[in-house]
Image 1: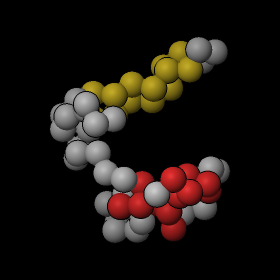
Image 2: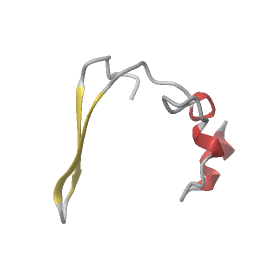
Image 3: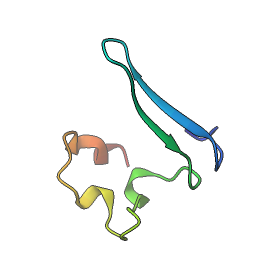
Length: 57
């Protein structure tokens, strides 16, 4: 992720489904503990499917 630059295009590919997502990088990479949605809400405040993501802070 650190190699991505603002403006880079990102594609998500699943072997069984093909391309399933597309996006454009809008800011530099940040640690998960610092990630905020454009609304200002923190990612770790959301109900995550992988709640242990915060264990490696």
